[in-house]
Length: 106
Image 1 (cartoon, rainbow, N blue to C red):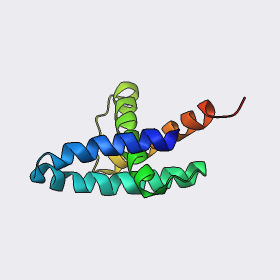
Image 2: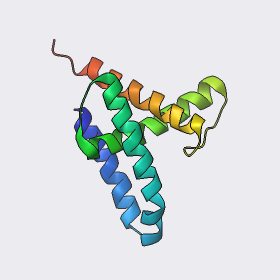
Image 3: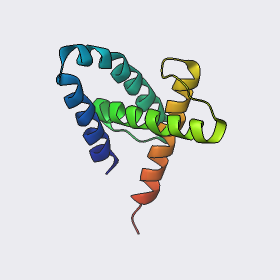
Image 4: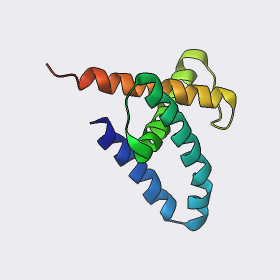
């Protein structure tokens, strides 16, 4: 379930990046940060999703973490800062824990 969501998010970002070459080049740092954050979050929650899954989880986590930090702390972290990476990591871990909670067998 989480892998499907992560792949869909990754595909959407990839399609948006392919629309123009300049936009694609500007997305490369986001993909790298997404991969790192997704891999760390997967290791923290002990769930494996592969490289594409980790990128999608990291990108979705950065969005979730950014929204949470803005709502709770009134901070708008930039992704390429320590606060931004921390927000992305928190968001990715929350995303993986919520998916684990929802996908448990009854």
